[in-house]
Image (tube, helix red, strand yellow):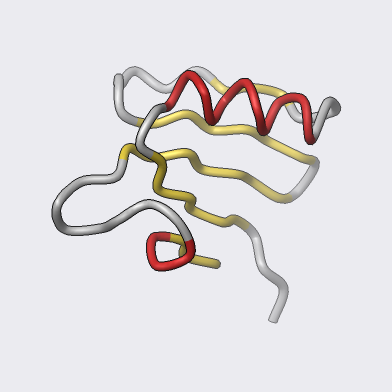
Length: 66
C-alpha cells in the first residue's frame, strides 16, 4: 500500500502554507474553492492543509495519512 496524501490540521492556514511551501518548494498549490483547505501537490502525493477545529486538533493528533 502506497500513501497518497497526508491531511494536516493547522490553526492558521496562511502560516502553514508559507511554512510548507518553503519546506517543499517543488509543491504546486491547487485551487480549491473553500477557505478552510489548501492542497499542495508533490507529484503523486498531496499535502492537505485543513483548519483545526474542536473535533480535530492541530499537531500530531490531527494528522491523517491516506
